[in-house]
Image (cartoon, rainbow, N blue to C red; front, side, top):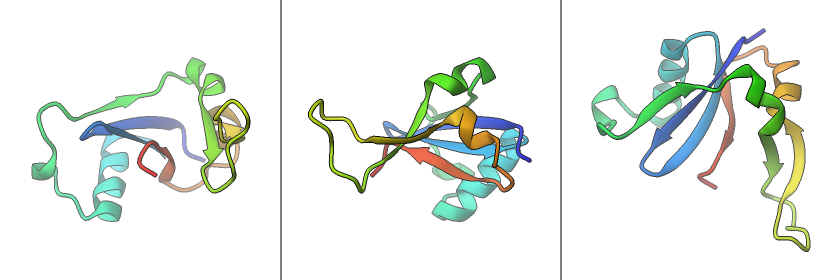
Length: 96
């Protein structure tokens, strides 16, 4: 089971990766995106999402139509997702 969520901020976008360490998250992210550490800019960042915020952040279905308020359908919260997070992976992104 993965124990942490890291928010990777790069080029104005955000990706959330579940992993046990920041290094694990970055290695996975770089392997998936074909980025190297030298590709990151100084303003890019990686921060751990505090566990107390997991219930406030959601994973949405960007393939579904938006509702009347312009929101996508919520699939689950980060907290709910972490109950079945067995592998390192990107769980949400703003780049869609």
